[in-house]
Length: 279
Ligand code: FAD
Image (cartoon, rainbow, N blue to C red):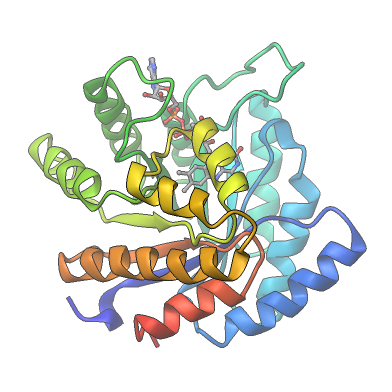
């Protein structure tokens, strides 16, 4: 598959402060030069970033780029999701990343929607074919899944409910993705499943984040990163080699695109993009 046919996208999170918004504007100006297919903007569970997600998406649209808000349903009511969908429609937004999300600590009630397939189904009932809907997929298995098969069937339910494509949790094991794609095909999941790519800029935050979301840092990568201590230049250089190697392997094996978790930083994603000759 040529790069022209693939989907290269960039994920941002909505800034919390005016200074954060200013920094994000600067990072986005650089990232926009890469000409991604779209920017996606995350959404805090329980609606905690609702307005900031929308504001960021509208700003990206005004800058002339395609934007897809995420929408997570845990802790939300039918009415609140309905209102958000109508807001998105009114602003001409046609692309969503639909998720369950995780209950924030202290919030005990899951709300109307227990799982993301219920959200996808609700979006389709409410808005028909208006939105292109992406969902999340987990090559290394979602940490709360009862079994790998259960998790695969959960993805299948999201596709059957009307999702058009999926973006994966990040991973550093190519084999996990390849095996997962084989298993998807075996149960008849044929939508594009775009690998999520996490650039490496710091060991401690990557380790913390990975423990929470169930992404494995292979031992050899962990050991090397640990050995660099505070030497962030070496961590970034090694991370670039590892992640660009993974991306090359994914593209050589016909991955339908790459979705970069930029963490609102432009430098590492830009370097990866250039190394991979994506534009
Ligand atoms: P689901 O698909 O509902 O799955 C959640 C768990 O429930 C899985 O373990 C699944 O196996 C299990 N399950 C599903 N159906 C059933 C069932 N019927 N019975 C029993 N178990 C079941 N979080 C945010 O809060 N905001 C974001 O913007 C955000 N963006 C993300 C983007 C991507 C690309 C990815 C990969 C993740 C993102 N997340 C985000 C994190 C995501 O919300 C969490 O991983 C969350 O724990 C699961 O969401 P899901 O949509 O995959 O849930």
